[in-house]
Length: 172
Image (cartoon, rainbow, N blue to C red; front, side, top):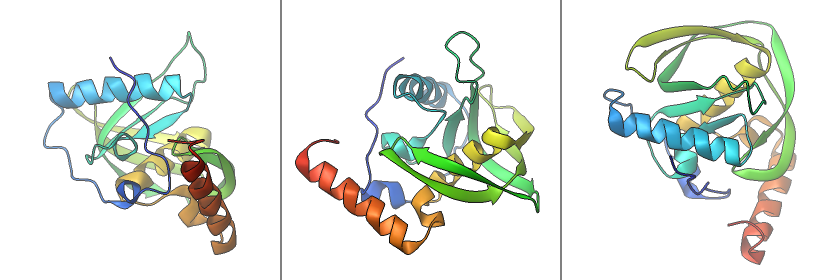
């Protein structure tokens, strides 16, 4: 497994829509493993393939936040089947936006269908942080970022700050 470089905003790579995965084969499994390694090293609770310059519909999440009791979920071609009318607000961050956070409102619960590590179709019901994390990572697959869910004023402040950090070399 390898730790991959994470693309930092603002970068046009993060705004591209990703292609579906034909099947979860050895190449995709290696990508999933490398993405998990990268996510844990960052550290984070989720990572989408475009954040590591791969434009395939692949995400990994692990909201367990423990080094010993890890519970990784690897998803290819995730799709939301159903979402609750109830909403939840989380102070979201993103590995592509280091040290930047904003409150984002999303459905509190989602049902998701995806291909797992063994190319098997799975469905999961998620709520709480797991629901938020899955939705956040799935947004990346469509070129949507968490800052796209907040006011234009807050979004512009965060993007300007990220641009300054990139220009200064503080973030690469």
